[in-house]
Length: 258
Image (cartoon, rainbow, N blue to C red; front, side, top):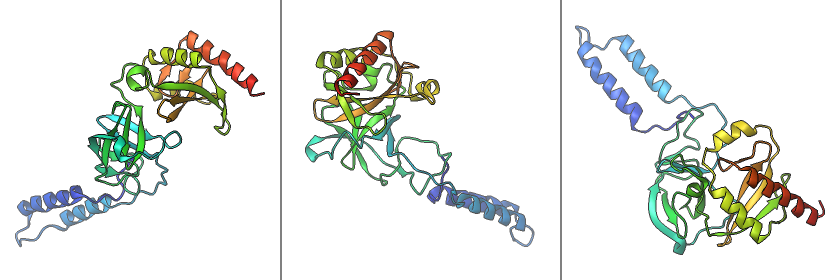
């Protein structure tokens, strides 16, 4: 991502330094050489050069070296009573300001305005879920999480696992409570290898849409790729977990007449 038209202090500090340095290299008439003036103009032109790329940002934010995506289809607006302590604040909004080679850093957000406060969500660790502008943002990448259990704060909080259509996301049916609990137990022990590692092994593969329903009424989708035995959450499954998913997927589909 590349800086777009964010004209903060940096370009003007640079201009000041260049003008200041030119004072020591004036000619005998006390006039700054044209070459230095031209160089200064080029720097300013480069700093204000617009980003010509058309970028469709994902609604994300980054704090404490953790990247979060908004969970738009499995949550609802958060009330004041659900807000925990402040855990961060937005310092830069990428939309209309950044370009393709922008390097994400703490305080970045795709659409949240500068100054937006980020809160913990009551009932969850702030490494898993946070709140900004009354919306829930859920962990996408956390290199400090060694396992899925450290990445996803869902142990003891899952109501059920359900199967969804990979075509339109519509619900097909639920795994039994026993199978759902076994799924979670197996999942949370898996090493966290990160989304990118899984993506490299699952390119162009067909995925199975699973939804994790939590006891507070919220949920989130997790895509499973049986060929690579990988999860978009950032893990590769065991053979036991693969058999569990595939066998009960067939049972759920049969019960739905598919």
